Length: 226
Ligand SMILES: Cc1ncc(CO)c(N)n1
Image (cartoon, rainbow, N blue to C red; front, side, top):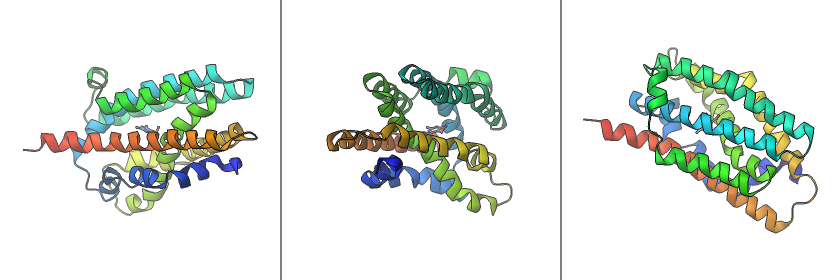
């Protein structure tokens, strides 16, 4: 059962998972009907998210009990610091956001809530808690992008085409597969029913906060409309 903890968590938290991966932001983006302001707001907050996400991977290195666990988290940390942030800055530039814009964006409450929730889950708990809190992020984006990629490819010049391809591409899909396998490995053996309930609640909460992140961007854009 715990060999695929992710499947178990998704099933247990089904309404939370669905509300996140099929959020209106995702639907409108897939259909090419996301307001530009919503995507731009999202990009600036996501830059701030990625900084905290890197800290979470650094915490995961510390929480590792074996060299293999520490090295897996070290690779994830390096991928964010050396690759993902660079791609993000380049994409943001195409949307008219300079590095200075990204640096000076005030962190929205939804960004603070999600990222600090994940960090706290990891600090108070063990590596499994931290990986479960991070699972909606890594595995959610991989699932969303793979699902909407066909729809997006059917529209040449789709405004968020490049963003979708980054997450639908082989490299990110492989990262997600590895994260899923790592979750299974960490859960191997002893998961008591109460421990499983605890992880299910953690996962469901992280899904809610991811949905809140999408909603934040839609709300911010709606506020700007004349
Ligand atoms: C909010 C959020 N969740 C997940 C990912 C995937 O890395 C991201 N970039 N941003």
